[in-house]
Image (cartoon, rainbow, N blue to C red):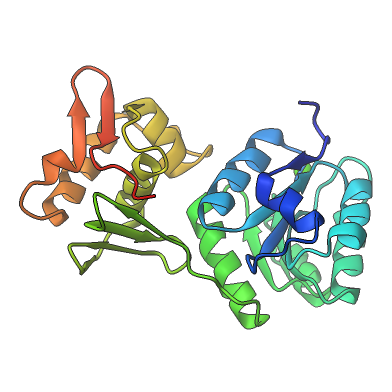
Length: 249
Ligand code: CA
C-alpha cells in the first residue's frame, strides 16, 4: 500500500456505514508506515475501530467525515503542520494524543497549550500508547467497552481494555513484557511466533532487543501461569512459542 493511502479496518468500515457498535474510534495520523501499522495492530487488538492516514490533508477530511473519538497525531507530517490538525480536532472536541520526535520541553508545552490531551515522545512502547488512549478516552467520557477474549473454555481471559489477564478466575500480575508475550501469542492461538517476532511485537520497533530475553520473559510468565504452564505457552523447538489454548468463539 502507498504511504498516505487510507487503510480501513472492518470495524472502521462498519462505523462509516453507520453501524456504530459502541467501540471507540481512533484516527491515526502518522506518515511513517511501520509506526502507523504497529499502532493499528495494538489498538485494534484493544478493541478499537481504527482509521489511519499518512497525511495532514487527509486527516482533516477524515476528522470531518468519520468523527473519530480520538486522534493519535504525529506532529511532524509531510504536507502540513501537525498543529493545524491539532487545532481542528480540538475545535471539534475530539481528544488528541500527540506523537512526536520533538522531545524538547518547549514543544511539549506548546502541544499541550494548543489543546492536546496527552503527549507521547518517540520512541514509545505501543502498549504504553494503548494505555494512554484508554485513559484519555475515559477522561472524555467515551464508553470503554471492555472486550474480553477467552481461551481454553474460559480458563484464560484477556481484557485488553482493562489490561487484565486471569487464569482460572485468578487475576495475574504481569509485567509489560509478559503481558506483551501473552497477548501477542493470544492474538493468533496456535500460530508459532519466533523469538525475533516476539521481540519485535513486544518491545515495538524501537528496540533492537536480544532474542534470548524473550526466553526469560516466557519463563517468568509461565511461573505465573499455574500448574501446567507449558501447555498454555508451548515451546516449539527450534522455532519459538505459541499459545496452546484455543480461542473460545
Ligand atoms: Ca513524522
